[in-house]
Image (cartoon, rainbow, N blue to C red; front, side):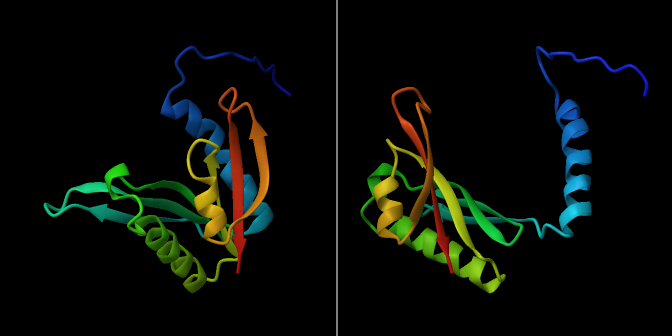
Length: 140
């Protein structure tokens, strides 16, 4: 084996990331088959058609991961968050997913997800310090 060095990058580039991601994804595909990756976007738009929030998710390995969900503070309580999540769940069901998972911070909306039928399956304390990152799932 040729000599290998370890270097810490001060300003890593997208090419540096791809040098790690591409062989990792190839390895995963060889072990699991097609990951069925697909991005999912459900947008909230104002009267002018401008994006003001929504839900961003990705279908990956037969689960839908909700990466982002945002409803402007002025519109909270209008059931828009529930609507976004319900639509994402419907997409996941139609695409044959096992379920949906997501994470949120303790200062965001863990109670909201519990009301939507999500089960807490883990947490990370002090992320950020003095707070908690909470992981939820809903299995179909």
